[in-house]
Amino acid sequence: MRILITSIVDLKKSQHNRPHQFVKYLSKKHEVTVLSINDWWKGGQDNLEAYSSEFDDDFKRIDYYYLTDKKVSPILQELLFRRKVKELLKEEDFDVHLNYSTLISGYVAAKRVKTVYDLADDLGAMIKESTQIPRLMRPFGGILGDLMVRRNIEKAEKVTVTTDMLKIAYSIPDGKCEVISNGVDTNLFRNYGNAKEELGLDGFIIGYVGVLREWVDLEPVFGALKDLDVEIKMVVVGKEGGFNENVRLAKKCGVSDRVTFTGMVPYSQVPKYISAIDVCLIPFKKSQISESALPLKLFEYMACGKPAISTELPGIKNVAGEKVMYATNEKEYKERIAELYKNEELRHEMGKSGREFVAENYDWEKIVERMERTLLTVGEPHWDSVTEVFIKEKI
Image 1 (cartoon, rainbow, N blue to C red):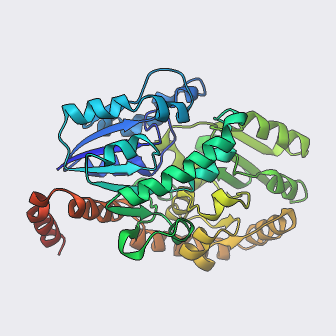
Image 2 (cartoon, helix red, strand yellow; image 1 turned 180 degrees about the vertical axis):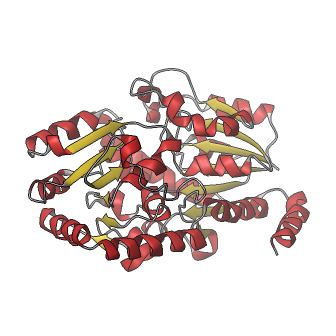
Image 3 (cartoon, rainbow, N blue to C red; image 1 turned 90 degrees about the horizontal axis):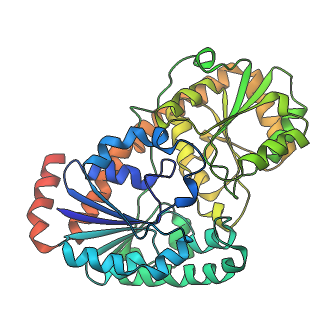
């Protein structure tokens, strides 16, 4: 099957995300072409080639194009460079189109190719708060985002979402919508044992792994850390977004001597950092963005057998229930961290339960198989026989 993926995420310049896994698994059995936004502004942040080297073999199996090489905002790329979509569709004949959360480029492609629209976040809300978009453009961008999401939903044959909250937010009919969760590579993400010495860390470590975008709020964690036992230290793994702002915030909160900021690390090293952490954190601000979110890091933490403390978000609550702890302010973070610090048996039980849970239910390979079946169903009629063979193989 020939699959076109239009992506709002630049797979070559972004930290690991959902479409990376779609490409990784689908390209092993199908011809995959990706057309994405060019996240040129991320190019100066760090050694992005080293970070994404884990996916080099996947990129070799696909054709990869950008909407443009010009250094303009993502909204302008979508608005001004639709020509690239039309050119690609004129040159290539695709069986099905997977639109990963694009607004306009994917909509243009959906007019020519049967489409599955994959919605992983509340795009309108993200645009309104995105620091990557000029402040004056954000309100307009948010309105455009909401409008185009609804148009893409109408145009698509099938809509896939990561959470029920997104389905409700956009009033997507049951017959048209399928919830396909985020997941984790359970072969890569596992417990690597005591990795602290190898990574130059010591003490009891609490940690956050991921982007430092506008929905991440480390202030209550820093505040809690100040009043916790001095043996407790923190590591922050990641750089995209407000890296310098958070370094300054740690200093302002009086904990800079107890917080290690690693910056961006190669994706293949992320599981080792998680293995070195004793208690993992998902400290998100309560917002329209986070209310619909299902962070990848939840599954990565659990796959590495680590206990997690998270903001109480509907997506996480619905998936993990009481398998994680929840905190909403400095006092609650302090209480939860202290409880886990003192109770090694509880940490072990949460970690073991979490690993078993994601290995059984949220391995990426199983999740992408669900997406593949959806694409086969939506694709051209001559793929019906392939669908039948695929299903028989799995039975």
